[in-house]
Image 1 (cartoon, rainbow, N blue to C red):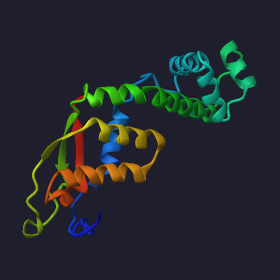
Image 2 (tube, helix red, strand yellow):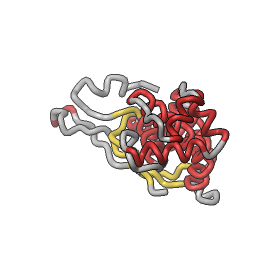
Image 3 (spheres, rainbow, N blue to C red):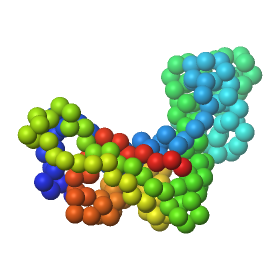
Image 4 (cartoon, rainbow, N blue to C red):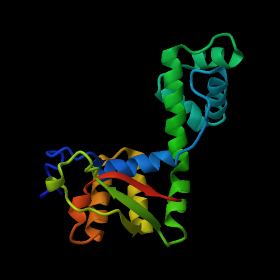
Length: 190
């Protein structure tokens, strides 16, 4: 859906596609180990989390971490190289993301009530006054079925699916919905 706002950056407006803002918000809901992957504490915490289940070991194998290397790390004989630490971190966050999907859906569904979001329009502070469009912050409640579709698309890395969800949100905004295809941010409290 890129009608009259197809060239929205032409006059220096700043923002991102609503689907990308939605993905950022969902990503922010995933919490986990705070210690960095380059610290001893962070490495040990990731190893404990990943070695505690078959899914964790599979996630590490998918990132190219061998059983031999894993055995050496857990025995304290070697420490992971920077490349291996990055792979360990990817395995951790990938598994963490998979495990929190159901929790995120429940939080956003709010027992069938859905969650209200706030949509901040594109930043027009660098647009000449005569070229600015009068856009307000919009608030809308997204229903559980829409959240389910959004979370599923985000979890699968399906940008087309997220864009379809955002198109539905824009349609629910009414006649000026297309003006919110690109936004500064999307936020909610769940």
